[in-house]
Image 1 (cartoon, rainbow, N blue to C red):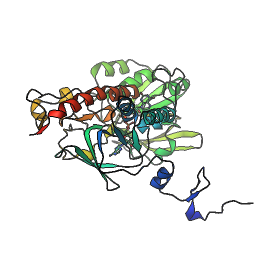
Image 2: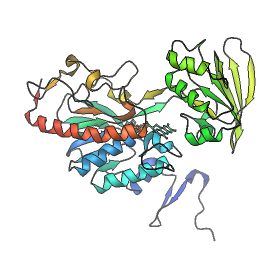
Image 3: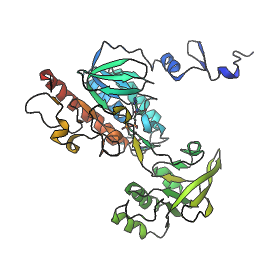
Image 4: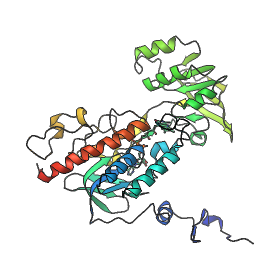
Length: 380
Ligand SMILES: Cc1cc2nc3c(=O)[nH]c(=O)nc-3n(C[C@H](O)[C@H](O)[C@H](O)COP(=O)(O)OP(=O)(O)OC[C@H]3O[C@@H](n4cnc5c(N)ncnc54)[C@H](O)[C@@H]3O)c2cc1C
């Protein structure tokens, strides 16, 4: 006997633990049912509002809530951020055989909840208002949230070159870093690495230890402008690396098993070639998720990352004064006192899970400092 006979427009069908059936629910309806989305009150003032539930935001939530602060965490998509997309994180301390990003994030989510952090997914923070105190966050659901301090943990999005069906192969032949396990599996294979920056250079030096051959694709004529000389020299000395200047991937063939062939084009001559390749490593940069901070007074650098601490001058940090001798930002504090930035969204940060987690923990000490000095707050 068929229990449910959904029409095509009612799919996907969700059968909830209590037997309720949701037909083609929106993400928010589903999240509400799973208690990931809770109704927010505009009347409450949180000690700290954390925007982004990637590793940085989750770590900040765990430490802030465990130290007795009232904490709200908001995320547009899901907890875990970019790390949540990683099939196996192998360089995170304490997990010698690796852990999936989802498993790590799931544990952190439960841990933050255990200490009393309120977490709401999916909800997008569309703007931050620093002209009032407490600060106000505008959400896409129409609610305005108030908080005495704000932590920006909105991370970054790895750039995806415009290659048809790229997403289909992510984690199955397309990688945005070099997972050691994939490097070890490259043994007898030729691989492609795309990108001309230092991160690409370091990855090539590492990959060349494993792969039979590394084809290094760059869009420009050479590496001189984008890579440090020492890396160019080291790569130049590697017999199993070939530089393909002015080259790009135009198409990928493959199937359920992943990538099988890659079609390359020389941008200058227009000539095409096809290579039998199973692994492609893309190092074409990342764009920070900081558009929501436009015109709020938080200083952003020319690449869109949030400036903090020593990246700021006293003049950048003059809008609000807590006390007469408080002219410098704390190391993770932005140009707006009491607004902090951590993880991949922060300029000069190390783009790693452990670094994001460390900054999340460190920011809480600074939040305490600001909450204490806010007792003497006066608007400039
Ligand atoms: C495929 C992949 C594999 C990786 N593997 C490793 C690895 O093995 N080891 C390692 O050390 N590093 C790895 N990295 C890098 C690592 O994942 C990042 O350095 C880390 O996730 C950064 O954490 P974060 O919290 O700063 O930002 P993110 O992880 O980017 O999280 C930011 C969160 O903010 C949310 N957000 C953005 N804008 C808004 C908004 N306006 N309102 C509300 N929420 C918002 C996003 O939805 C996201 O959940 C990997 C990255 C990728 C892409």
